[in-house]
Image (cartoon, protein in one colour):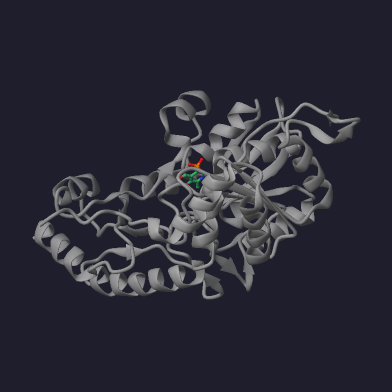
Length: 362
Ligand SMILES: Cc1ncc(COP(=O)(O)O)c(C=O)c1O
């Protein structure tokens, strides 16, 4: 029997073939109708006023820090349980990442921890939807608004998620998405930024177009210096196809989650929790392993039968940040050591996964 893989893409070549042919026939590979349409559709879906496409969530987060003018001497408070990109971009602009420990159940930033960390150097807060789970973002936004601190949402994993009826993309001041193959929408590599701010949208429009704004005679007028982090037309076609079915993808993944919770719950695995007013897109099916179970051994023992991986990382415990800041966050560190991600895709035989787990735990 072949190994059950972690994830399968939600897009097939037959879905994009016709549009790909049109793109090739037209010769318009960039800045065409599909990029424009994907931007509008992302804004409409999330409820954000503006959407910009980029090459990745990492690029998006970095651009947001540049937009806010964050640099040396500044601090950005960041959820500690995330992929290292969240803190890497803060470090890269010369600011200090201040690691916020997370809730052991939702894996997300805790309001009381955030409030204790806010200080005179805090220039932004970066909330991470851990594995796509937005639980608690609304309360974090309330705190940030009261203190007039911009909130960046690292929603790399969270397309399709929402809290209290508001979708990720329309809650924080700036939201960053990823379209990497581990995400629910994949364009190979890719990302997006959404915002409701017209002023920031103007900045992004110019900066993401090499600094050009309008024409000077017959040539572009470069009013600022800028960047090129564009997504191509072919990628935009892929993104549009998946965005059109995102709600059904989320529904199907939640059905799989229910089955997992039943079957692995019996074995003592504890699923990541989401709030009752949350739609969780289940980007990753993550559990804490049962008491006394060696997570690394379990991953190794399942290899060849079921592909699994760790939940995600405690940023403050990574070798680089640990040696520089010595600021370990205990809950995130514990979650890094005890969480496991199981396969999740439509059509998955959850019973077969549970049987494989039962066999190795025996
Ligand atoms: C929370 C989080 N932030 C950022 C990233 C980086 O995303 P990208 O690969 O699109 O740069 C990831 C990738 O897994 C992630 O999970």
